[in-house]
Image (tube, rainbow, N blue to C red):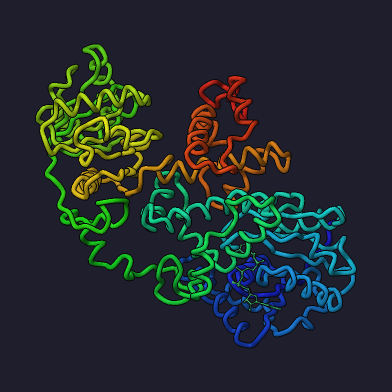
Length: 614
Ligand SMILES: NC(=O)c1ccc[n+]([C@@H]2O[C@H](COP(=O)([O-])OP(=O)(O)OC[C@H]3O[C@@H](n4cnc5c(N)ncnc54)[C@H](O)[C@@H]3O)[C@@H](O)[C@H]2O)c1
């Protein structure tokens, strides 16, 4: 028989605690909600009423249910009110000494059979448990932010947590409508161990002025389908909490430099820029606690408008001569696209549908015929799906001329190169383009891993060379990474931005570093997931679950690796490791072995999972 939980206590009503109170009260459980002072108690009460009022306004909660929910919560200052609850969950700040003192006190106050749980994200549950006389009844119940929304709960058992307590807590999670994964006590558990290296890396990219906050966030949302960008997520988590989590993970998790908090985080915490809760973090919010971002000096409204209409563009970030200069984009009406693969085909369609005159150049008449067929097939699918009319399809096709010689690019305004990912081939092509194209043309490469500067230096006009990294499938994915080298001119960047805007794409500007924004932030996380699996900490299914249900990712890391291809992931990870020399970026041995064994993912029928019978 599972234990009955009729009343629970929640200690600390900040970002997490207030949400956890709501989860219990929504599910018919009485809650004693405890804070350290009257003022903090009022803040916690306001968070809970604000959240439930929003649920009512959105039609997700009936007024009567809200009133019943609030009626189940008994707000109190001090721990004494917790004497008769069946379980206490603590959500006070992430400091070991504070939590240990609190647990010692809870041990004295609570009835002997009560379970004592911590919502810690990174501290050792074992170390917290030994501050009590009942370590076998101490457990981690790690909710995700926002607690009422995110489905995942990580249940952390220590070596002494009793099996009954684990089973009771798992049954409680099910009653709360949550999905739990039960794991051992290790720094960061599953989700944070995979998330925080990525978040810290994103902050370091921002700190290095490699891309703007908006561009970093847009890249990860649009390139990976994440619900929020990393900097917006840091603001939601709270920079003080994030700092403590990173710091603990660094110390407990083998001093991996990727968890050493980026200096900017500490500076922001010291300056009181804690994120949403203080009204200002990486972004500025309407008021403390509000989710609404408002313009600030980094992105005044006027600049946003200027960027939107593409008239005059400020190339705000970037390296070398493009920084902080006003520049006018060149007029682009005719575009050359070189290549005959998946990317070239998609990019031809994108430009032709947006009204550009397109010259497609391949290495032979037969290849041109194949590409032409592929573009037609894709446009026809669009017609069938009602995305464009037959007349629009015909007009788009009418704008494309098919050629097998580069000389036909003599009068285009922009060239997009999408040939095989080999440096020697691309360099030779750029040297030829330099001879063929008129002056002032923007020469762009779609490379996803080669240095753009190598291609720029193959020409006599490096200022006109830039990366336009489209994502696959190009007609669907709205992100384009605009990669500036140290020689790219502000005008070239301005033209690239204006073209992306005209294509209806979101162009994010970044520097010429391995992986640009998306791959640099995505692949180390995937590699970390492989290392976690290799260490037998958890299963591929649970890790996938944790990232989907705890962080709202559209796919778990192993699902995604099987789609991307393990060989592709390994190649990208090797590049990142070679360029940045970061020990933590070394490819996971398991990934190397799977690739050697021919387990490449869906395309070979087997990767982390067997796809032959699916
Ligand atoms: N923020 C997140 O996204 C997140 C997600 C999951 C878990 N966590 C974990 O949850 C815990 C709380 O984090 P948070 O972000 O909610 O912090 P927070 O700073 O937003 O809230 C902490 C609250 O605890 C109160 N408090 C401090 N000392 C107290 C005491 N002795 N008795 C009662 N209340 C006290 C504070 O007044 C404050 O309201 C941490 O262990 C954190 O790692 C945070």
